[in-house]
Length: 361
Ligand code: NAD
Ligand code: TYD
Image (cartoon, rainbow, N blue to C red; front, side):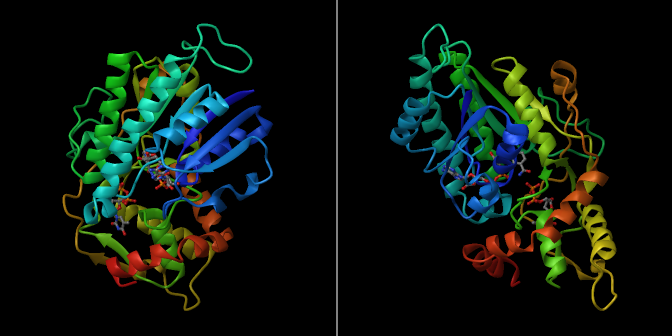
């Protein structure tokens, strides 16, 4: 049985990753280290409550003593780092937590893992990996590359880092630390830079789940600026399958861009969501959900366009997304309609206070 120490698995992508990993009865143990910030929610993992393959530990990636203890106790074959502060708007209003977790936290995690990895044996055994077989995979974003003009080619792995928001700057810093720990100490690292994800368990502060949630609640659907900003959308399970593929076959020290060639303007995404909701759950008054669209002040420093060139992972590792935007977005809307209790659970508490401050919602 393989063991993975995975951080941030009570969040959106991390929880989907655990579900993808453990699906089909795979013989893997996941030790899930998560601080349970506002974005971490054990309800995302409720179906694994009695599964001995999932061990949950509440804690901070920056707590070196705790991480060292977990590494000793579980002897993981790999560490996958999802844990992060992840919302651009929050990073604008309060960048401190982003520096603390994404930069300082990643540094502490790297140092704990370096000590563990350095003490691994030359030969793997049933209970411990070898120094050569161990992997550290860092999950990052395309936002580290900055913004594109309409005529620019999509971001390739060779694109310079030009982060524009406190969030993307903190992720860029963490990517650089991971890179340096490979080049300086020889740590066996892999980095993935993915485009915008969507799907189940997505916290409703991000565009897609926020719009579904607000539409159903009869609230405004806030469009920042002119709504012509472009994002490159990928269904979350496709991202999770790509990470597993990189873990399995990625070249050490390399970075892999992950994306589904699915560029969409925000306004088009919101109109698509409204049209699917009109069909699946029409408003009681018969009006279209699009009538709730409301233009609001633009985000400061708003990146105009992200787009991923995914040819490297397609060519070298044979990964391809399984969902199109059309199939993935329909599944997603249906998931939110079927999981009103989950949405209610995560939209109570701190989040609601923050939302009220932001939008007066
Ligand atoms: P999320 O905000 O939904 O989840 C983050 C999780 O990390 C939460 O469970 C939270 O409790 C946990 N966490 C936060 N600080 C922690 C700390 N100090 N120690 C331990 N746990 C901590 O984020 P997400 O959207 O699932 O993103 C996961 C990762 O993927 C992030 O690194 C993000 O930068 C990256 N990423 C996200 C997207 C996207 O579209 N959401 C795209 C590309 C890359
Ligand atoms: P978001 O989901 O926050 O992801 P990111 O900023 O990491 O790309 O936002 C996606 C796009 O949608 C981004 O261009 C900002 C825009 N947006 C809105 O227009 N209205 C909203 O209420 C939100 C949350 C985002």
